[in-house]
Image 1 (cartoon, rainbow, N blue to C red):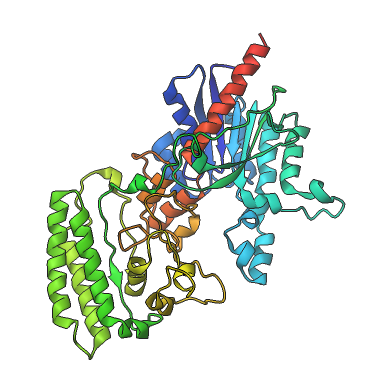
Image 2: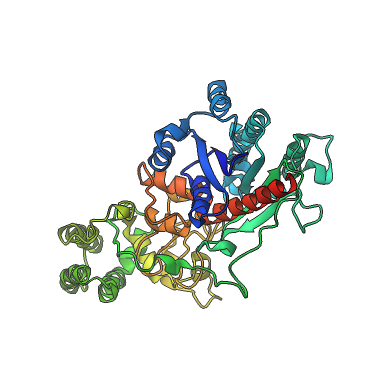
Length: 476
């Protein structure tokens, strides 16, 4: 083994794991990492990987296909570390496996992605790396095998994964954690401004117990990083839509004047609080024009929805005219653009208290209760009530989800009337500020939401180097 450990990244996604391992090299330690290959099936994610790792490092294809495996065996025979998080859809605590229809749950149960970890181990078996890192969602802890002969702890998929590694000659036990073969790590404990709990299995062929990864942030340690991490980014305003078919449009009509006042007041607030003088002037122009329009239509008692639509059309034209979202030339901010929102949701975003959610603003017993928001809420109240979640500056973010490609309602900006941009989401995932995700906005959200936070991956990488160092000493 050389002083450089070669890494194969399976199910590489947008490159969170690889990025974290390469960040270890910046500390100029005795040993470092080199990414030999990254394997991914998604085209946009592969474009991202090629941009950051180089085209020669990326294998785009289905890991279950023999041709892909053959290429891996030919190019990665000397790999020291295999890392990866096989997608296991029914393990997720947040997805439809827990909350969807019976038909949806059955479909997910038979989803071939749930057996991808078997192909992961087939590749490990062929390459025989010195280290294996297996990452997965916390929901995997409750996943049971359907093998009827197995009972109790033996039936847990997580235990079977560990047993599979041990059968291949790997030590999985964790130092100072008797009989524990995996760790559940929360990214927020390692400098990521986001709560994100993940199962991590580290296994090695040196016969050494694997390091217990100790938190570096929280409690009496370094304070947690929070959503404040994105506070100094340039302001962004969404393009807004309004259709007469919008659910609860009648409630919008009832709150016609209030809605206009709330919206114009928010534009004024943003204009008063942006630090960039040029941006401030443009936002002030926007506010002044909108305020004149508001004053002219606020008392109209007829054609309220038509008035709202014309007001929104004016707003959409003015944000283009005054280049509200185009004030920086930096290519780093190319993904810092808001998705389109409907006017009802924008009002909900503004009226919801920072750090609160729809479950609270619909609860009459909560201090956050708001009759207007309660009536505007467009979804089935007998099911999920926490559809809207507004973040606050002084706390870490909720777990960034790939579901952001569908909507971002659980990720409302603390002070701006929109959900988080892809760039904000990647910073809350601890990706470097100069990291660029390829593909459309939905592709970006999906890559970011599925990623291993690089700062967490970096900590895992360092723990592997420590075990490697000990094995070198033992073999002298």
